[in-house]
Length: 464
Ligand SMILES: Cc1cc2nc3c(=O)[nH]c(=O)nc-3n(C[C@H](O)[C@H](O)[C@H](O)COP(=O)(O)OP(=O)(O)OC[C@H]3O[C@@H](n4cnc5c(N)ncnc54)[C@H](O)[C@@H]3O)c2cc1C
Image (tube, rainbow, N blue to C red):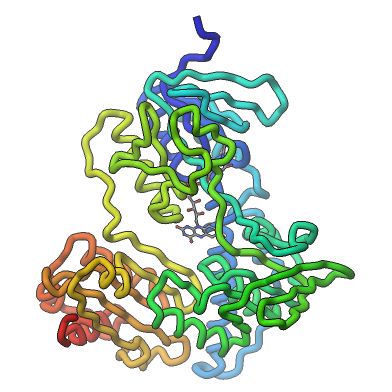
């Protein structure tokens, strides 16, 4: 007889989705072993969404106070990083301690292990506990859920490995601000953190390999953000790679493909993510251990007794995707009915100021998919709300219509609370609400979302 411990379910990796699934399965009465080699909750609460959004909030407050000069008279502000560091370390992360999350899972009835887990064949998992105790083998009658997430990628820059560069995990633990910072990567993480630090007085240069910031968004959104960054004194180098890095006497020296040498106190590397798939022994269940993503069906199944959720499914590296997939996998595991996974209305928000939010397809994506496309755009600052708002109102709305079906298949909102305005358009894309029906609605005056009406009117051109 096997000496493996018999349980119903093992959850490997406790990102937001894995933690929620382990909790729900244990609450439903399954015997659940929940394993994480770092912190229960994953990247989002300790190093990702939550601390960075606290940092963004602080930086936005500063920007708003500075705008007050134009609106309400002279205001003086002396910024300090101390309250930001305090909020992040105490309120967001409990000093990067997961006790509360562990207890929450234990109270639900799950056994929680800190350790590195790997597969050992179908429905079998071996855990090497972090405390150095003997490895434990589990056999899970229902199966195994993988939610291993990603870690910061290290780009192949000569000399980089030997330097004390930051990743997002260091940036959220900063207590003293540097004088200058180079941010490698102009994606969502790089852009959010670049603006945060710049608004606190750090001299920031963003080095972006591609030809624009936020490359997955509409080009109009990237262009607008680039203008805002330039206005705020953030230098953006596009089409440029770092070729060499060295660190001495408290300074980074960075060679670039454009032959310019950059010197900065700190370097933040935000140049992509590496999936945590390399140590899972995926080959023991017939999956490719070198793959960057694991293919799942619309119930999150990746094999016999195996469900996979989160960033490593390649459906969108967002907490809301991890949670959405978690609920689908949970229903499948517990034998409950419910809708299968669909991603046609996947929303994403970059919390710069202005926020850059999108849902569904971009114009280019819709054309590539062979749709008959009609687009409509409007500028937020030209709306009534933008006019009354004044400084800080820059933004745009862009709609992408499948003209054959007369429904929106994608939308972008750049602007103050762009992510909130996007909610309306997410419903429209999700439920394929006819454009004629959207046009017939009453939009409250003078809200930012009322500008959607202008973008809808602009859809009237010829489709191509
Ligand atoms: C700076 C930053 C800002 C972000 N901001 C946002 C945002 O505003 N909104 C948003 O939606 N998303 C945001 N994200 C993305 C978000 O953090 C992730 O999409 C989210 O955490 C979901 O990831 P996940 O569920 O795949 O797993 P993760 O959160 O990555 O967690 C995976 C867990 O698995 C564990 N693990 C891995 N391998 C093993 C193993 N072999 N054994 C045991 N445990 C293992 C890891 O230790 C980790 O705790 C941000 C990310 C970053 C880095």
